[in-house]
Image (tube, rainbow, N blue to C red; front, side, top):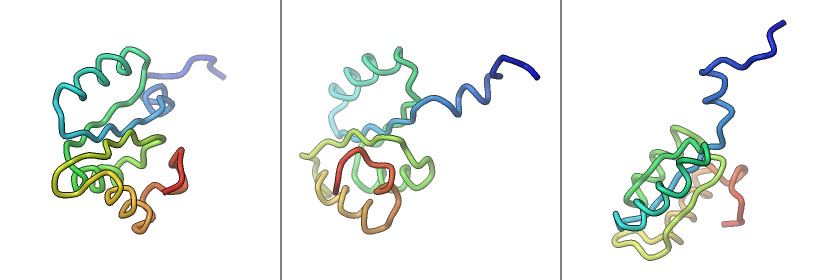
Length: 94
């Protein structure tokens, strides 16, 4: 039995983080801070995009901006929970 983890398995072991923000400056700071820490980062710039992406990846954690146009962070969180996409894995209660 091998003691080493191959690259594909290592990628699966990285904590996945969905970052949702409509401000590119905020995304730049978050990505620059967290990417070197080894997170599997995915980015959405709107609530609807976050809902779609969360369904595809089932993130370990969602970092969600509250103040966004069209669908704010609270509504995005509510819809994620109603649609049962990520509530079981969320770090907070929706």
